[in-house]
Length: 146
Image (cartoon, rainbow, N blue to C red):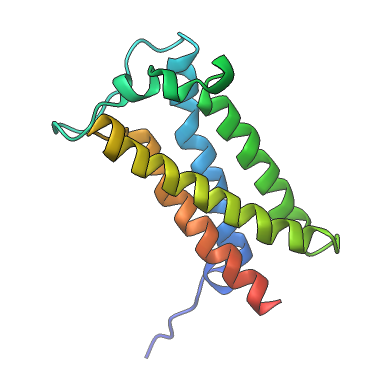
């Protein structure tokens, strides 16, 4: 009988949180390219529910005239640094806990704002939100286990 062996990511929730953070960053790259004028159109799944162009071009997506995708990339870079440092640097642990709370709050706020204000969703932003949920789940699990 074959035994099922867990992958390294499944054994270590910190690895899973790190991968999820990287995925969140990857979902923001096309949005940044669009917001910076390098990509004319963000493709969406075929549904009236999605309108990534309208949402990412909106005034709400440019706080202080800065594309929110760039702010998000910077924010997730900080989270990634904390995820990588948490086992080596003592102060990283409480900082990571706070940063995961901030990241989950920001992702939830953005999803709610899209539904309430735009009555549509940015498919790329939903990818970021889902990756953030996974990152927070596994990051908190790692903090509890260590």
